[in-house]
Image (tube, rainbow, N blue to C red; front, side, top):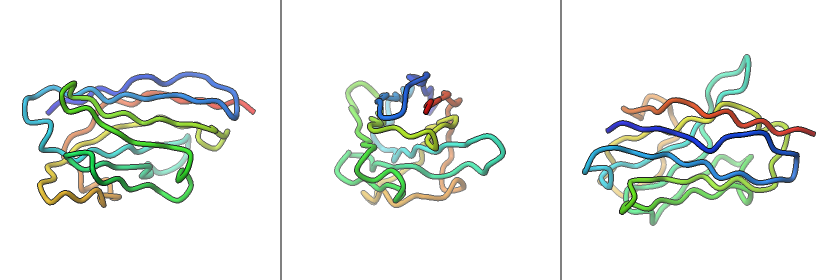
Length: 126
């Protein structure tokens, strides 16, 4: 499966953005999808994940209550709705996918994913 993330941009603190991760491949609905981000000079970190069906999600504590991950398997797309953005959310955001038949969304490690998209820049100004 091939992934493409888009939807980043420049937004003021307190604003919102919605990122999209578009996938190719008819078997996309078999994959759990995660979002990661990488700020300059920092390690790539986990943000959120969603299971193959969209029934389970998992978030890092720093974005809980502000970010929502969802998916539309008919459109082969996963979304990351980001609200109440903070300057510390500034990073390049990546989506990643792995086969996930178990229904779990608990995949917070980078090496648990087999497929990665290119990043999309999110910049939050103060």
